[in-house]
Length: 67
Image 1 (cartoon, helix red, strand yellow):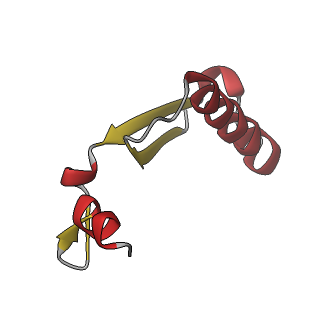
Image 2 (cartoon, helix red, strand yellow; image 1 turned 90 degrees about the vertical axis):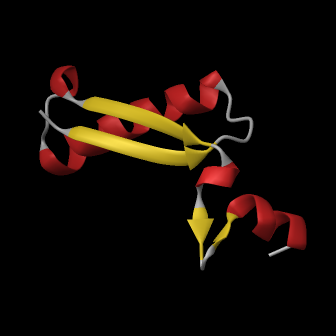
């Protein structure tokens, strides 16, 4: 049973986009690794930009600065 965890920043991703990610990852695992889609689990975690850091600073700060 494959388990895939996708982490993205919480910035207006639509339900349709999430559904497309889930379907696409499931299909990819079936195509590449011959995994059963019925037992493939995909979880999408949305993280606030204040809680996601790169290079010692949050994404919120980086984006406000234009990086």
